[in-house]
Length: 90
Image 1 (tube, rainbow, N blue to C red):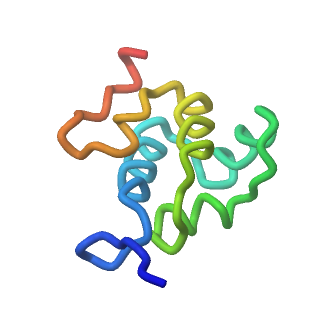
Image 2 (cartoon, one colour; image 1 turned 180 degrees about the vertical axis):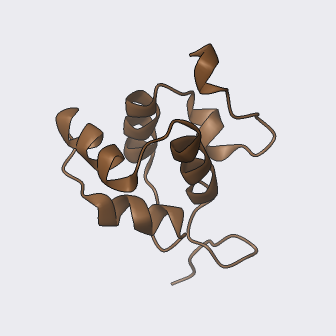
């Protein structure tokens, strides 16, 4: 079965954006996973690592959860033309 991948071979376009947003907010992968758990999503830091490394596909449900937990718009996670907001302006 054919699977869509980025030009670089990654399984998602969210990984790099997620890592940048997480770093901008000063949150570790473990901390983000814990934030997701507190919001009711059963994930661990391996979930975050695999997304950021492009090893894992990301569902729309997961995009919504990540955007809510990080308090960002979904397009900040998927659209490279959308600037990542400064954490000071949040």
